[in-house]
Length: 133
Image (cartoon, rainbow, N blue to C red; front, side, top):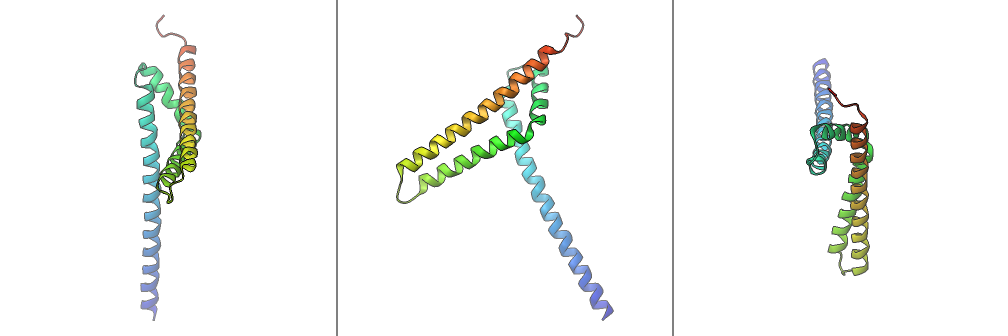
């Protein structure tokens, strides 16, 4: 009797441990995907700027992570809605046009957000006193 209780408790703890591990792995993968998206944005936007501007831009992105990910989420959702509208049967041209407008709006919003961050980074770098001068 005592032995079966210990065996049952061990199995329950093992199951709980596995569940927590799966949750943590899923959470980590989700975070890595978001981090990868931010790195792609960073490389596309700031690649033509000097290292100090890129560093400052990364800092501004980090400080505004929630807003950035919200903009990315809105763009992904708009793209998913467009894909669904394109596949709908019967084909609804007006719905597809509306979905295209939503994608365009979300894209413009994300671009404006990134440009705001870049401007903030440029202002921060230019506000710092010159080194060695």
